[in-house]
Image (cartoon, rainbow, N blue to C red):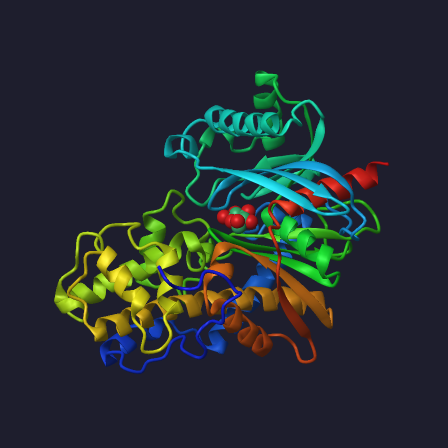
Length: 460
Ligand code: BGC
């Protein structure tokens, strides 16, 4: 694909959702994807109510947005030093990382593809796989016997009861190892490592990717108060006052919070479409993570595919002829959405390639414009929903200026998401609040080392 893959290039300006040349019937059919500010405000009221329930002791158990404390009580101040290992499980790839902080920050990592029969199956198999990857990489780097502190970025709903203890609530994003639910994932990892006996490490912390993202951004931009992931999944964490965080009992200290599965109680039903319901019904976790399923990279391509397939079958696109791939689940990858939207106005390079890949070689220029418009409607809805989520937290925090550290493939690769978010957040936050969106460089990796480093400082 020729589209620019990073934020270094200038994205095409002002083309997201441009209806020029798009068939009127496609514009009409996509209207339900355009959320008004009134709808977004309704969403924000309901999310705030859910966050408040998640924060309170007596309502947390039944709350949909859990707001689990992270047990991270300090943000890095740039003086953190040392060698660390990190594991990053829960994004598009599983990674083992080696990180040196202080002086010249060094970072090396190895990526491992998790086979389907490991992602879904027994917990032993998954944790043995992780331990093997860790041992092999640590041995390759010659640090296996150094007892280095390790930060374990585990990006699934986890009820943390300490910095190094986390009980798995449930799996998301296509993972499912049912025998581990309710168990301490740090213990599972320790056991898998001990069984092998060929690597000595000290697990210093388990953390969510949003926490790592907040910390990694704060290292560079000290006014960062929120960490957001917009990648395979989506979630945010923020720094909350002790008085609000009833689940975190230590006096006089701030604490971060993770919010997650908004919508699972029907709060989003007023904006969910047939495509959203289809994606949910065919997922490994139906009825769960409904907010995430409208937004994140694991689902966006499939949402576009479902709409395009429907419009094609209704005779609105591709001469009414859907190809096998267009009719097959998972064949429209989310990266195609970004790539298509990278095409400048009047240029059909990427959209044409995607159509060819999907066996839609009969596509006309009008089909290209229609497909690009469909992509932009789903991306815009995702960007607006995520902005409304952020605005809810920002208004609740009451800070006048702050930065939001953001990571995730969708945020990094999509040409319009950042711009759309900046615009919508401005419209939805209370007057006088200044918000900056900053890219958090590898929060899940570097952030894990930082949590381990901050924990080490507090130990001494
Ligand atoms: C998980 C969160 C995670 C988010 C982003 C969600 O599916 O439940 O814990 O932070 O994905 O990776």
